[in-house]
Length: 219
Length: 219
DNA sequence: AAATTTACATTGCGCGCAATATGTAAATGA
DNA sequence: TCATTTACATATTGCGCGCAATGTAAATTT
Image (cartoon, rainbow over all chains, first blue to last red; front, top):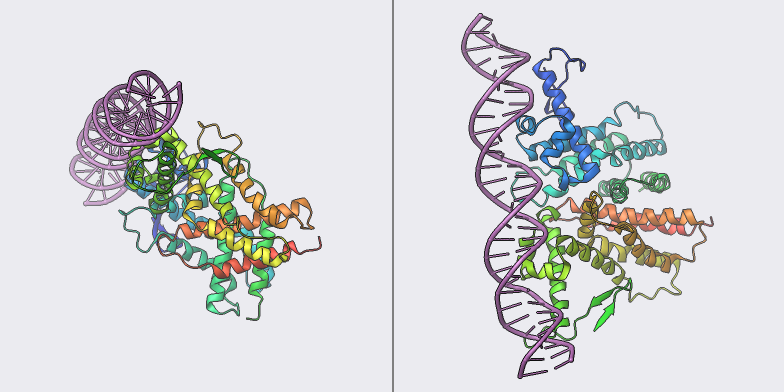
């Protein structure tokens, strides 16, 4: 009845298609939760977190606010669920890519492209805005912090690809953090462009160059 | 009575110190406006834009909301003033640096360091959050867009330093945009770290390498 | 020195927001 | 099949927010 996500937490799972007839509780739950989370991503990407209000979510998800309360407890719970979902969204870009035996520069290329597919998405944009608002909150447990969790989810993929690096620990961490920061930066300038977003292929090229050079360094 | 800022707009100017006695109107105006804008930066950096409320600003600035209304018309006007002030804040890091006759790599180093002094600041953090909220607004004129203005203020400094580049126009623009995006990215990951922010010297080093290499390219 | 304008402080108001409480039909379990 | 739980919808409330209106003591102008 329940599967686990990438972090071992229980998540609801849809049992069958989206037919109109009789539905199981698990189906209904999974479907509505997905619709709500999708509405969060859509809404934040379009109008920002500040205007992501209860009625707006209800409209876009096609449910009432009562449904959100039932499944997530309230607005905060809903946003947290969206953040966690965005973590899975990132990892999903690397699920089907076999990376064993692939040369370093090719791995670097694939990582940057795959990661950009995430950082350029509504999912990351939403997670970023949500986490940014959460850091300024004094209520709310946040232990360990969500940004730690986010970095973990990045680091899992990263390590799977580049664990064979000869760099010293802190240098390895620096280039990793640099790479992720660059992607986050390209995403952040993109956010400010509103609708018409420019392509980023040249910039991603610069990043790939640095990545290949630094990872291939003999320390 | 009035000077102009870097963009040719009239701004109030303090006439004399912050003594307690008799004050001119221009003094009072300049002082209060500065206090309010400073409160905006402080508040957003500490608790985020969402919790940057009228009463919070009043508290931190030591004035009432009526003062804000008088000087900026309302909340939006206040935030816009803060954004414009942040543009000047960026340029101020390069005012006293003579760059004529300085070799390219040294100029690159100075630009990255000076720019990071801005991107890592509360001022940029605040401007970013404000602009991010403004892109999702349908009211509000925004012509030409504030992000265009922001890029202009960056570009002015950039061009002053690197106008002698041999790169083609679009390649030059790409490396410029990359540089600014990296700085914005380092800033954005820093925002999520809350209080305890890590140093970024290694990452800035990677950026400097790329910058020197690409600008020195014979096209 | 009188008139006017400026630079605020004070008060009150309306609105949108999220939470609470409650109702109900469908699904599940005994 | 009947009791119970689940998955929502609906109605109501309270609260914090920014704004508008007004008051007032300074500073400036005449």
